[in-house]
Length: 597
Image 1 (cartoon, one colour):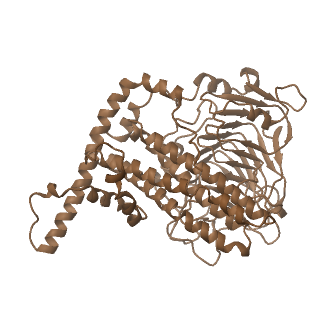
Image 2 (cartoon, one colour; image 1 turned 180 degrees about the vertical axis):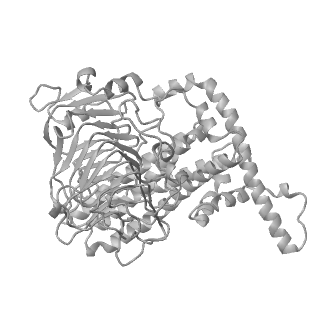
Image 3 (spheres, one colour; image 1 turned 90 degrees about the vertical axis):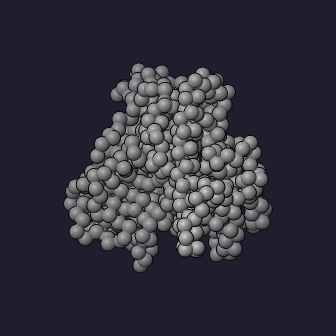
Protein backbone atom coordinates (compact mmCIF):
# COMPACT_ATOMS: atom_id res chain seq x y z
CA UNK A 1 0.00 0.00 0.00
CA UNK A 2 1.64 3.20 -1.15
CA UNK A 3 1.59 5.96 0.67
CA UNK A 4 -23.64 11.43 -13.98
CA UNK A 5 -25.24 10.46 -10.64
CA UNK A 6 -25.78 6.74 -10.11
CA UNK A 7 -28.92 5.17 -8.75
CA UNK A 8 -28.68 4.05 -5.12
CA UNK A 9 -28.60 0.30 -4.71
CA UNK A 10 -30.52 -0.16 -1.50
CA UNK A 11 -33.55 1.97 -2.11
CA UNK A 12 -36.84 0.76 -0.73
CA UNK A 13 -38.16 -1.56 -3.43
CA UNK A 14 -41.65 -2.99 -3.97
CA UNK A 15 -41.15 -5.88 -1.55
CA UNK A 16 -39.91 -3.51 1.11
CA UNK A 17 -42.89 -1.24 0.56
CA UNK A 18 -45.25 -4.17 1.17
CA UNK A 19 -43.40 -4.98 4.36
CA UNK A 20 -43.55 -1.31 5.26
CA UNK A 21 -47.34 -1.25 4.97
CA UNK A 22 -47.63 -4.40 7.07
CA UNK A 23 -45.71 -2.70 9.84
CA UNK A 24 -47.78 0.50 9.81
CA UNK A 25 -49.25 -0.09 13.24
CA UNK A 26 -45.86 -0.52 14.80
CA UNK A 27 -44.51 2.48 12.90
CA UNK A 28 -47.24 4.71 14.31
CA UNK A 29 -46.02 3.86 17.78
CA UNK A 30 -42.44 4.57 16.74
CA UNK A 31 -43.47 7.89 15.16
CA UNK A 32 -45.08 9.00 18.41
CA UNK A 33 -42.04 8.02 20.42
CA UNK A 34 -39.68 9.60 17.89
CA UNK A 35 -41.63 12.86 18.17
CA UNK A 36 -41.09 12.81 21.94
CA UNK A 37 -37.39 12.18 21.37
CA UNK A 38 -37.04 15.03 18.90
CA UNK A 39 -38.83 17.40 21.25
CA UNK A 40 -36.30 16.44 23.90
CA UNK A 41 -33.40 16.94 21.51
CA UNK A 42 -34.53 20.34 20.29
CA UNK A 43 -35.39 21.43 23.80
CA UNK A 44 -31.88 20.58 24.92
CA UNK A 45 -30.28 22.36 21.96
CA UNK A 46 -32.49 25.43 22.34
CA UNK A 47 -31.76 25.49 26.06
CA UNK A 48 -28.04 25.39 25.37
CA UNK A 49 -28.26 28.16 22.79
CA UNK A 50 -30.35 30.35 25.09
CA UNK A 51 -28.02 29.71 27.99
CA UNK A 52 -25.00 30.73 25.90
CA UNK A 53 -26.85 33.74 24.56
CA UNK A 54 -27.82 34.87 28.03
CA UNK A 55 -24.27 34.43 29.27
CA UNK A 56 -22.98 36.55 26.40
CA UNK A 57 -25.53 39.24 27.17
CA UNK A 58 -24.44 39.24 30.79
CA UNK A 59 -20.83 39.67 29.78
CA UNK A 60 -21.53 42.38 27.23
CA UNK A 61 -24.11 44.39 29.16
CA UNK A 62 -23.14 43.71 32.75
CA UNK A 63 -26.72 42.85 33.58
CA UNK A 64 -29.07 39.90 33.29
CA UNK A 65 -30.63 39.24 29.92
CA UNK A 66 -34.29 39.62 29.12
CA UNK A 67 -36.63 37.16 30.78
CA UNK A 68 -38.02 36.63 27.32
CA UNK A 69 -35.02 34.43 26.34
CA UNK A 70 -37.21 31.92 24.53
CA UNK A 71 -38.33 34.65 22.15
CA UNK A 72 -34.74 34.91 20.86
CA UNK A 73 -34.97 31.49 19.19
CA UNK A 74 -34.21 31.39 15.47
CA UNK A 75 -33.32 28.68 12.94
CA UNK A 76 -29.86 30.20 12.60
CA UNK A 77 -29.15 29.77 16.29
CA UNK A 78 -30.09 26.09 16.05
CA UNK A 79 -27.91 25.66 12.97
CA UNK A 80 -24.96 27.25 14.76
CA UNK A 81 -25.44 24.98 17.78
CA UNK A 82 -25.48 21.89 15.57
CA UNK A 83 -22.54 23.00 13.41
CA UNK A 84 -20.38 23.58 16.47
CA UNK A 85 -20.03 19.80 16.74
CA UNK A 86 -18.68 19.37 13.20
CA UNK A 87 -15.12 19.35 11.86
CA UNK A 88 -15.90 22.20 9.48
CA UNK A 89 -18.35 24.50 11.35
CA UNK A 90 -18.07 27.46 8.95
CA UNK A 91 -18.74 25.24 5.94
CA UNK A 92 -21.56 23.58 7.85
CA UNK A 93 -23.25 26.88 8.66
CA UNK A 94 -22.88 28.31 5.16
CA UNK A 95 -24.24 25.13 3.55
CA UNK A 96 -27.20 24.81 5.93
CA UNK A 97 -28.13 28.49 6.25
CA UNK A 98 -30.07 28.28 2.99
CA UNK A 99 -32.27 25.57 4.48
CA UNK A 100 -35.29 27.80 5.13
CA UNK A 101 -35.44 28.99 1.52
CA UNK A 102 -34.42 25.78 -0.28
CA UNK A 103 -35.94 23.09 1.89
CA UNK A 104 -38.91 21.19 0.54
CA UNK A 105 -40.15 20.71 4.09
CA UNK A 106 -43.63 22.12 4.61
CA UNK A 107 -42.68 23.48 7.99
CA UNK A 108 -39.61 24.81 9.73
CA UNK A 109 -41.10 24.16 13.13
CA UNK A 110 -38.27 24.18 15.63
CA UNK A 111 -39.28 20.76 16.94
CA UNK A 112 -38.60 19.25 13.49
CA UNK A 113 -35.52 21.30 12.71
CA UNK A 114 -32.62 19.03 13.81
CA UNK A 115 -34.07 16.11 11.85
CA UNK A 116 -34.78 18.28 8.81
CA UNK A 117 -31.35 19.90 8.94
CA UNK A 118 -29.67 16.52 8.98
CA UNK A 119 -31.66 15.39 5.94
CA UNK A 120 -30.85 18.65 4.22
CA UNK A 121 -27.13 18.22 4.96
CA UNK A 122 -27.23 14.82 3.25
CA UNK A 123 -28.83 16.36 0.17
CA UNK A 124 -26.18 19.07 0.10
CA UNK A 125 -23.45 16.41 0.12
CA UNK A 126 -25.20 14.40 -2.59
CA UNK A 127 -25.72 17.44 -4.82
CA UNK A 128 -22.05 18.38 -4.59
CA UNK A 129 -20.80 14.88 -5.35
CA UNK A 130 -23.24 14.51 -8.24
CA UNK A 131 -21.96 17.77 -9.68
CA UNK A 132 -18.38 16.48 -9.81
CA UNK A 133 -19.18 12.88 -10.75
CA UNK A 134 -18.04 13.43 -14.34
CA UNK A 135 -14.56 14.55 -13.25
CA UNK A 136 -12.83 11.15 -13.74
CA UNK A 137 -14.04 10.95 -17.35
CA UNK A 138 -12.99 14.55 -17.95
CA UNK A 139 -9.53 13.85 -16.55
CA UNK A 140 -9.20 10.68 -18.62
CA UNK A 141 -9.93 12.71 -21.76
CA UNK A 142 -7.06 15.03 -20.79
CA UNK A 143 -4.61 12.22 -20.06
CA UNK A 144 -2.05 10.82 -22.48
CA UNK A 145 -3.31 7.43 -23.66
CA UNK A 146 0.11 5.97 -22.90
CA UNK A 147 -0.21 6.88 -19.22
CA UNK A 148 -2.02 3.64 -18.48
CA UNK A 149 -1.37 3.68 -14.73
CA UNK A 150 -3.02 7.06 -14.31
CA UNK A 151 -5.98 5.99 -16.45
CA UNK A 152 -6.42 2.92 -14.22
CA UNK A 153 -6.52 5.17 -11.15
CA UNK A 154 -9.03 7.53 -12.74
CA UNK A 155 -11.29 4.61 -13.68
CA UNK A 156 -11.12 3.52 -10.04
CA UNK A 157 -12.19 7.04 -9.05
CA UNK A 158 -15.20 6.76 -11.37
CA UNK A 159 -16.22 3.50 -9.67
CA UNK A 160 -15.66 4.97 -6.22
CA UNK A 161 -17.66 8.12 -6.99
CA UNK A 162 -20.55 5.93 -8.11
CA UNK A 163 -20.31 3.91 -4.90
CA UNK A 164 -20.23 7.08 -2.80
CA UNK A 165 -23.32 8.46 -4.52
CA UNK A 166 -25.11 5.16 -3.89
CA UNK A 167 -24.19 5.30 -0.20
CA UNK A 168 -25.45 8.87 0.12
CA UNK A 169 -28.68 7.86 -1.57
CA UNK A 170 -28.98 4.94 0.85
CA UNK A 171 -28.48 7.33 3.77
CA UNK A 172 -31.13 9.73 2.46
CA UNK A 173 -33.64 6.92 1.89
CA UNK A 174 -33.03 5.61 5.40
CA UNK A 175 -33.26 9.09 6.95
CA UNK A 176 -36.70 9.57 5.40
CA UNK A 177 -38.18 6.56 7.15
CA UNK A 178 -40.51 7.52 9.97
CA UNK A 179 -38.39 5.52 12.42
CA UNK A 180 -35.10 6.83 11.03
CA UNK A 181 -33.58 7.24 14.51
CA UNK A 182 -33.42 3.45 14.65
CA UNK A 183 -31.27 3.49 11.50
CA UNK A 184 -28.60 5.87 12.77
CA UNK A 185 -25.91 3.20 13.01
CA UNK A 186 -26.51 2.18 9.38
CA UNK A 187 -26.39 5.80 8.25
CA UNK A 188 -23.15 6.40 10.11
CA UNK A 189 -21.42 3.42 8.53
CA UNK A 190 -22.60 4.44 5.05
CA UNK A 191 -21.30 7.99 5.55
CA UNK A 192 -18.02 6.48 6.74
CA UNK A 193 -17.97 4.56 3.47
CA UNK A 194 -18.51 7.73 1.42
CA UNK A 195 -15.49 9.37 3.04
CA UNK A 196 -13.46 6.19 2.51
CA UNK A 197 -14.40 6.09 -1.18
CA UNK A 198 -13.24 9.67 -1.73
CA UNK A 199 -10.01 9.04 0.15
CA UNK A 200 -9.41 5.81 -1.79
CA UNK A 201 -9.68 7.74 -5.05
CA UNK A 202 -6.99 10.15 -3.89
CA UNK A 203 -4.80 7.35 -2.55
CA UNK A 204 -5.03 5.57 -5.90
CA UNK A 205 -4.07 8.69 -7.83
CA UNK A 206 -1.14 9.20 -5.50
CA UNK A 207 -0.12 5.57 -5.91
CA UNK A 208 -0.44 5.38 -9.70
CA UNK A 209 0.57 8.88 -10.79
CA UNK A 210 4.01 9.96 -11.90
CA UNK A 211 5.70 13.23 -10.98
CA UNK A 212 4.27 14.68 -14.18
CA UNK A 213 0.75 14.36 -12.76
CA UNK A 214 1.20 16.26 -9.51
CA UNK A 215 -1.03 19.08 -10.75
CA UNK A 216 -3.82 16.65 -11.65
CA UNK A 217 -3.74 15.09 -8.19
CA UNK A 218 -3.81 18.55 -6.61
CA UNK A 219 -6.76 19.52 -8.81
CA UNK A 220 -8.69 16.40 -7.82
CA UNK A 221 -8.04 17.07 -4.14
CA UNK A 222 -9.41 20.57 -4.54
CA UNK A 223 -12.47 19.31 -6.40
CA UNK A 224 -13.22 16.74 -3.67
CA UNK A 225 -12.77 19.17 -0.80
CA UNK A 226 -16.39 20.31 -0.55
CA UNK A 227 -17.77 16.77 -0.90
CA UNK A 228 -15.48 15.60 1.87
CA UNK A 229 -16.40 18.48 4.19
CA UNK A 230 -20.15 18.19 3.57
CA UNK A 231 -20.12 14.44 4.19
CA UNK A 232 -17.96 14.80 7.29
CA UNK A 233 -20.38 17.40 8.64
CA UNK A 234 -23.38 15.14 8.02
CA UNK A 235 -21.56 12.37 9.87
CA UNK A 236 -20.81 14.67 12.80
CA UNK A 237 -24.42 15.85 12.96
CA UNK A 238 -25.87 12.36 13.07
CA UNK A 239 -23.21 11.27 15.59
CA UNK A 240 -24.13 14.22 17.80
CA UNK A 241 -27.82 13.42 17.54
CA UNK A 242 -27.08 9.93 18.89
CA UNK A 243 -25.42 11.51 21.93
CA UNK A 244 -28.29 13.92 22.49
CA UNK A 245 -30.85 11.14 22.28
CA UNK A 246 -28.92 9.10 24.83
CA UNK A 247 -28.59 12.10 27.14
CA UNK A 248 -32.00 13.71 26.96
CA UNK A 249 -34.42 11.05 25.75
CA UNK A 250 -37.10 9.81 28.11
CA UNK A 251 -36.68 6.40 26.46
CA UNK A 252 -33.13 4.94 26.36
CA UNK A 253 -31.72 4.14 22.93
CA UNK A 254 -31.68 0.39 23.47
CA UNK A 255 -35.39 0.30 24.27
CA UNK A 256 -36.29 2.37 21.21
CA UNK A 257 -34.39 -0.08 19.03
CA UNK A 258 -36.38 -2.99 20.40
CA UNK A 259 -39.54 -1.28 19.25
CA UNK A 260 -38.38 -1.52 15.63
CA UNK A 261 -37.40 -5.18 15.90
CA UNK A 262 -39.53 -8.09 14.79
CA UNK A 263 -38.06 -10.20 17.55
CA UNK A 264 -35.76 -13.17 17.26
CA UNK A 265 -32.01 -13.21 16.75
CA UNK A 266 -31.75 -12.29 13.08
CA UNK A 267 -32.33 -9.36 10.74
CA UNK A 268 -35.31 -9.59 8.38
CA UNK A 269 -33.11 -10.69 5.47
CA UNK A 270 -31.72 -13.75 7.27
CA UNK A 271 -33.58 -17.04 6.96
CA UNK A 272 -32.87 -18.54 10.36
CA UNK A 273 -33.64 -22.13 9.36
CA UNK A 274 -31.27 -22.01 6.40
CA UNK A 275 -28.54 -20.44 8.51
CA UNK A 276 -28.80 -23.21 11.08
CA UNK A 277 -28.56 -25.87 8.39
CA UNK A 278 -25.50 -24.17 6.91
CA UNK A 279 -23.73 -24.29 10.27
CA UNK A 280 -23.75 -28.06 10.16
CA UNK A 281 -20.21 -29.46 9.83
CA UNK A 282 -21.35 -31.31 6.69
CA UNK A 283 -22.97 -28.29 5.08
CA UNK A 284 -22.72 -29.69 1.56
CA UNK A 285 -24.60 -32.81 2.61
CA UNK A 286 -27.49 -31.11 4.40
CA UNK A 287 -28.04 -27.88 2.50
CA UNK A 288 -29.18 -27.69 -1.09
CA UNK A 289 -27.05 -25.27 -3.07
CA UNK A 290 -28.81 -23.00 -5.55
CA UNK A 291 -25.71 -23.04 -7.78
CA UNK A 292 -22.74 -25.40 -7.87
CA UNK A 293 -19.31 -24.64 -9.29
CA UNK A 294 -17.24 -27.60 -10.46
CA UNK A 295 -14.30 -27.61 -12.83
CA UNK A 296 -15.18 -31.07 -14.15
CA UNK A 297 -18.58 -29.94 -15.41
CA UNK A 298 -20.64 -31.75 -12.76
CA UNK A 299 -22.11 -28.50 -11.43
CA UNK A 300 -24.21 -25.70 -12.86
CA UNK A 301 -21.10 -23.66 -13.68
CA UNK A 302 -17.40 -24.28 -14.21
CA UNK A 303 -16.20 -20.88 -12.92
CA UNK A 304 -17.03 -18.94 -9.79
CA UNK A 305 -17.54 -15.71 -11.72
CA UNK A 306 -20.17 -17.30 -13.95
CA UNK A 307 -22.05 -18.54 -10.89
CA UNK A 308 -21.93 -15.09 -9.27
CA UNK A 309 -23.16 -13.45 -12.47
CA UNK A 310 -26.12 -15.83 -12.53
CA UNK A 311 -27.42 -14.57 -9.17
CA UNK A 312 -30.53 -12.39 -9.38
CA UNK A 313 -29.58 -8.78 -8.74
CA UNK A 314 -30.72 -7.15 -5.48
CA UNK A 315 -32.20 -10.40 -4.23
CA UNK A 316 -33.59 -10.09 -0.72
CA UNK A 317 -33.15 -13.76 0.21
CA UNK A 318 -30.02 -15.90 0.33
CA UNK A 319 -28.47 -17.45 -2.76
CA UNK A 320 -26.21 -20.37 -1.84
CA UNK A 321 -23.24 -21.16 -4.09
CA UNK A 322 -21.28 -24.35 -3.42
CA UNK A 323 -17.75 -24.37 -4.86
CA UNK A 324 -16.35 -27.89 -5.13
CA UNK A 325 -12.73 -28.67 -4.33
CA UNK A 326 -10.17 -27.38 -6.79
CA UNK A 327 -7.92 -24.43 -7.56
CA UNK A 328 -9.85 -21.81 -9.48
CA UNK A 329 -7.48 -19.55 -11.39
CA UNK A 330 -9.67 -16.50 -11.84
CA UNK A 331 -10.26 -13.01 -10.55
CA UNK A 332 -13.77 -12.84 -9.13
CA UNK A 333 -15.83 -9.69 -8.63
CA UNK A 334 -19.06 -9.81 -6.63
CA UNK A 335 -20.83 -6.70 -7.93
CA UNK A 336 -22.62 -4.36 -5.55
CA UNK A 337 -25.97 -5.42 -7.08
CA UNK A 338 -25.42 -9.03 -5.98
CA UNK A 339 -26.77 -9.18 -2.45
CA UNK A 340 -26.92 -11.90 0.19
CA UNK A 341 -24.69 -14.52 -1.43
CA UNK A 342 -23.54 -17.43 0.73
CA UNK A 343 -20.53 -19.15 -0.80
CA UNK A 344 -18.95 -22.24 0.72
CA UNK A 345 -16.28 -24.70 -0.33
CA UNK A 346 -14.77 -27.98 0.75
CA UNK A 347 -12.21 -26.40 3.07
CA UNK A 348 -9.83 -23.45 2.81
CA UNK A 349 -6.98 -25.70 1.60
CA UNK A 350 -9.17 -27.68 -0.82
CA UNK A 351 -11.27 -24.96 -2.47
CA UNK A 352 -8.98 -22.11 -3.50
CA UNK A 353 -9.40 -19.01 -5.63
CA UNK A 354 -6.01 -17.97 -7.01
CA UNK A 355 -4.87 -14.90 -8.95
CA UNK A 356 -1.77 -12.79 -9.44
CA UNK A 357 -2.81 -9.21 -10.28
CA UNK A 358 -0.40 -6.74 -8.66
CA UNK A 359 0.89 -3.19 -8.54
CA UNK A 360 4.19 -3.84 -10.33
CA UNK A 361 2.37 -5.10 -13.42
CA UNK A 362 0.01 -2.12 -13.57
CA UNK A 363 -2.99 -2.98 -11.39
CA UNK A 364 -4.09 -0.60 -8.66
CA UNK A 365 -4.33 -1.77 -5.06
CA UNK A 366 -8.08 -1.21 -5.26
CA UNK A 367 -8.52 -3.52 -8.26
CA UNK A 368 -5.75 -6.12 -7.87
CA UNK A 369 -7.67 -8.37 -5.48
CA UNK A 370 -8.07 -11.98 -6.53
CA UNK A 371 -11.55 -11.86 -5.00
CA UNK A 372 -13.40 -8.52 -4.73
CA UNK A 373 -16.66 -8.35 -2.78
CA UNK A 374 -19.01 -5.39 -3.11
CA UNK A 375 -22.53 -6.81 -2.66
CA UNK A 376 -23.96 -6.50 0.84
CA UNK A 377 -24.62 -9.50 3.07
CA UNK A 378 -21.88 -11.69 1.59
CA UNK A 379 -20.91 -14.80 3.58
CA UNK A 380 -17.95 -17.05 2.74
CA UNK A 381 -17.08 -20.30 4.45
CA UNK A 382 -14.31 -22.87 3.98
CA UNK A 383 -12.63 -21.17 1.00
CA UNK A 384 -9.04 -20.07 0.43
CA UNK A 385 -8.13 -16.81 -1.33
CA UNK A 386 -4.62 -16.39 -2.77
CA UNK A 387 -2.55 -13.85 -4.61
CA UNK A 388 0.54 -15.59 -5.96
CA UNK A 389 2.35 -12.51 -7.34
CA UNK A 390 5.02 -12.78 -4.64
CA UNK A 391 6.79 -10.11 -2.59
CA UNK A 392 8.69 -8.63 -5.55
CA UNK A 393 5.43 -7.39 -7.09
CA UNK A 394 4.58 -5.27 -4.01
CA UNK A 395 0.84 -4.64 -3.53
CA UNK A 396 -0.99 -7.86 -4.40
CA UNK A 397 -4.35 -8.31 -2.64
CA UNK A 398 -5.86 -11.75 -2.04
CA UNK A 399 -9.28 -10.40 -1.06
CA UNK A 400 -10.87 -6.97 -0.90
CA UNK A 401 -14.19 -6.62 0.86
CA UNK A 402 -16.12 -3.39 0.44
CA UNK A 403 -19.38 -5.21 1.26
CA UNK A 404 -21.47 -4.11 4.21
CA UNK A 405 -22.41 -6.90 6.61
CA UNK A 406 -19.86 -9.33 5.17
CA UNK A 407 -18.77 -12.44 7.08
CA UNK A 408 -15.86 -14.83 6.54
CA UNK A 409 -15.75 -18.10 8.46
CA UNK A 410 -12.91 -20.66 8.32
CA UNK A 411 -11.39 -18.95 5.28
CA UNK A 412 -7.71 -18.46 4.38
CA UNK A 413 -6.06 -15.35 2.94
CA UNK A 414 -2.60 -15.93 1.52
CA UNK A 415 -0.28 -13.34 -0.06
CA UNK A 416 2.58 -11.01 0.88
CA UNK A 417 2.07 -7.23 0.81
CA UNK A 418 -1.53 -6.03 1.34
CA UNK A 419 -3.05 -9.51 1.62
CA UNK A 420 -6.44 -8.59 3.06
CA UNK A 421 -8.05 -5.26 2.14
CA UNK A 422 -10.85 -4.56 4.62
CA UNK A 423 -11.84 -1.53 2.61
CA UNK A 424 -15.04 -0.20 4.24
CA UNK A 425 -18.34 -1.00 5.98
CA UNK A 426 -18.95 -3.76 8.59
CA UNK A 427 -16.98 -7.01 8.38
CA UNK A 428 -16.48 -10.03 10.66
CA UNK A 429 -13.82 -12.76 10.41
CA UNK A 430 -13.96 -15.89 12.53
CA UNK A 431 -11.54 -18.85 12.63
CA UNK A 432 -9.66 -17.54 9.61
CA UNK A 433 -6.00 -17.88 8.55
CA UNK A 434 -4.20 -14.74 7.34
CA UNK A 435 -0.59 -14.48 6.26
CA UNK A 436 1.50 -11.71 4.69
CA UNK A 437 4.28 -9.19 5.14
CA UNK A 438 3.79 -5.42 4.70
CA UNK A 439 0.47 -3.97 5.93
CA UNK A 440 -1.17 -7.29 5.25
CA UNK A 441 -4.42 -6.39 7.04
CA UNK A 442 -5.42 -2.88 6.03
CA UNK A 443 -8.34 -0.59 5.20
CA UNK A 444 -11.00 1.53 6.90
CA UNK A 445 -13.76 -0.93 7.73
CA UNK A 446 -15.32 -1.58 11.11
CA UNK A 447 -13.82 -5.07 11.36
CA UNK A 448 -13.43 -7.70 14.07
CA UNK A 449 -11.10 -10.69 13.80
CA UNK A 450 -11.98 -13.40 16.29
CA UNK A 451 -10.19 -16.71 16.89
CA UNK A 452 -8.08 -16.13 13.79
CA UNK A 453 -4.52 -17.28 13.10
CA UNK A 454 -2.45 -14.31 11.92
CA UNK A 455 0.95 -15.29 10.57
CA UNK A 456 3.62 -12.84 9.35
CA UNK A 457 6.05 -14.39 6.87
CA UNK A 458 9.54 -13.54 5.69
CA UNK A 459 9.49 -10.37 3.50
CA UNK A 460 12.00 -9.10 0.96
CA UNK A 461 15.49 -8.19 2.16
CA UNK A 462 15.54 -4.82 3.95
CA UNK A 463 11.77 -4.96 4.50
CA UNK A 464 10.06 -5.30 7.86
CA UNK A 465 6.63 -6.80 8.57
CA UNK A 466 3.63 -4.74 9.65
CA UNK A 467 0.53 -6.78 10.39
CA UNK A 468 -2.01 -3.93 10.28
CA UNK A 469 -2.40 -0.52 8.67
CA UNK A 470 -5.73 1.02 9.64
CA UNK A 471 -7.05 3.97 7.63
CA UNK A 472 -9.51 5.93 9.79
CA UNK A 473 -9.70 9.47 8.39
CA UNK A 474 -12.34 11.27 10.47
CA UNK A 475 -12.84 11.49 14.22
CA UNK A 476 -16.48 10.46 13.79
CA UNK A 477 -15.72 7.36 11.70
CA UNK A 478 -17.19 4.31 13.42
CA UNK A 479 -14.30 2.23 12.09
CA UNK A 480 -11.21 0.40 13.29
CA UNK A 481 -9.50 -3.00 13.54
CA UNK A 482 -10.29 -5.18 16.55
CA UNK A 483 -8.19 -8.35 16.89
CA UNK A 484 -9.81 -10.47 19.59
CA UNK A 485 -8.72 -13.87 20.91
CA UNK A 486 -6.40 -14.51 17.98
CA UNK A 487 -2.93 -16.04 17.72
CA UNK A 488 -0.04 -14.14 16.14
CA UNK A 489 2.78 -16.51 15.19
CA UNK A 490 5.43 -16.80 12.49
CA UNK A 491 4.71 -18.48 9.17
CA UNK A 492 7.93 -20.43 8.71
CA UNK A 493 11.23 -18.86 9.62
CA UNK A 494 10.90 -15.09 10.08
CA UNK A 495 14.07 -13.13 10.81
CA UNK A 496 12.80 -9.71 9.72
CA UNK A 497 11.60 -7.19 12.28
CA UNK A 498 7.88 -7.64 12.77
CA UNK A 499 5.41 -5.12 14.19
CA UNK A 500 1.76 -5.34 15.14
CA UNK A 501 1.01 -2.44 12.83
CA UNK A 502 1.52 1.15 11.82
CA UNK A 503 -0.95 4.07 11.71
CA UNK A 504 -1.87 4.75 8.09
CA UNK A 505 -4.16 7.77 8.59
CA UNK A 506 -4.59 10.51 11.19
CA UNK A 507 -7.28 8.72 13.23
CA UNK A 508 -5.99 5.19 12.76
CA UNK A 509 -7.58 2.82 15.32
CA UNK A 510 -6.35 -0.69 16.14
CA UNK A 511 -6.70 -2.79 19.28
CA UNK A 512 -5.43 -6.29 20.11
CA UNK A 513 -7.18 -8.07 22.97
CA UNK A 514 -6.95 -11.44 24.64
CA UNK A 515 -4.57 -12.71 21.96
CA UNK A 516 -1.40 -14.80 22.03
CA UNK A 517 1.56 -12.90 20.57
CA UNK A 518 4.69 -14.86 19.71
CA UNK A 519 8.23 -13.66 20.34
CA UNK A 520 9.00 -12.66 16.75
CA UNK A 521 7.10 -9.39 17.37
CA UNK A 522 9.49 -6.52 18.06
CA UNK A 523 9.43 -5.34 21.71
CA UNK A 524 8.35 -1.88 20.53
CA UNK A 525 5.18 -3.51 19.23
CA UNK A 526 4.31 -0.81 16.74
CA UNK A 527 6.09 1.44 14.25
CA UNK A 528 5.25 4.85 12.83
CA UNK A 529 4.26 5.29 9.19
CA UNK A 530 7.17 7.67 8.77
CA UNK A 531 9.86 6.26 11.00
CA UNK A 532 11.30 9.62 12.08
CA UNK A 533 7.90 11.18 12.85
CA UNK A 534 5.70 10.27 15.80
CA UNK A 535 2.11 9.55 14.76
CA UNK A 536 -0.52 12.22 15.49
CA UNK A 537 -2.08 12.21 18.92
CA UNK A 538 -5.46 11.50 17.32
CA UNK A 539 -4.71 7.80 16.69
CA UNK A 540 -6.02 5.11 19.04
CA UNK A 541 -3.76 2.06 19.44
CA UNK A 542 -4.18 -0.25 22.40
CA UNK A 543 -3.48 -3.68 23.85
CA UNK A 544 -5.47 -5.56 26.45
CA UNK A 545 -4.80 -8.76 28.35
CA UNK A 546 -2.62 -10.42 25.71
CA UNK A 547 -0.25 -13.30 26.40
CA UNK A 548 2.89 -14.86 24.97
CA UNK A 549 6.53 -13.73 24.74
CA UNK A 550 5.67 -10.93 22.31
CA UNK A 551 3.01 -9.41 24.57
CA UNK A 552 5.37 -7.79 27.07
CA UNK A 553 4.64 -4.06 27.35
CA UNK A 554 7.84 -2.79 28.99
CA UNK A 555 9.52 -1.59 25.80
CA UNK A 556 6.45 -0.58 23.81
CA UNK A 557 6.28 2.72 21.90
CA UNK A 558 5.60 5.83 23.97
CA UNK A 559 3.24 7.57 21.55
CA UNK A 560 0.54 9.82 22.96
CA UNK A 561 -2.01 7.87 20.96
CA UNK A 562 -0.91 4.46 22.24
CA UNK A 563 -2.53 2.84 25.30
CA UNK A 564 -0.51 -0.06 26.70
CA UNK A 565 -3.48 -0.88 28.90
CA UNK A 566 -7.24 -0.37 28.71
CA UNK A 567 -9.90 -0.65 31.35
CA UNK A 568 -12.25 -3.61 31.13
CA UNK A 569 -15.04 -1.23 30.23
CA UNK A 570 -13.10 0.35 27.36
CA UNK A 571 -11.90 -3.01 26.04
CA UNK A 572 -15.49 -4.24 25.99
CA UNK A 573 -16.39 -1.50 23.48
CA UNK A 574 -14.18 -3.27 20.93
CA UNK A 575 -15.94 -6.63 21.25
CA UNK A 576 -18.40 -7.74 18.59
CA UNK A 577 -21.71 -6.39 19.86
CA UNK A 578 -20.77 -2.85 21.01
CA UNK A 579 -18.20 -2.33 18.27
CA UNK A 580 -20.74 -3.11 15.54
CA UNK A 581 -23.48 -1.32 17.51
CA UNK A 582 -25.37 -4.61 17.49
CA UNK A 583 -24.44 -8.00 16.11
CA UNK A 584 -27.85 -9.17 14.88
CA UNK A 585 -26.64 -8.96 11.28
CA UNK A 586 -24.06 -11.67 11.91
CA UNK A 587 -25.76 -14.98 11.12
CA UNK A 588 -25.16 -16.75 14.43
CA UNK A 589 -26.10 -20.10 13.02
CA UNK A 590 -23.42 -20.11 10.35
CA UNK A 591 -20.72 -18.24 12.29
CA UNK A 592 -20.29 -18.64 16.04
CA UNK A 593 -18.91 -15.62 17.85
CA UNK A 594 -18.13 -14.43 21.35
CA UNK A 595 -19.67 -11.27 22.75
CA UNK A 596 -17.62 -11.17 25.96
CA UNK A 597 -14.00 -10.28 26.58
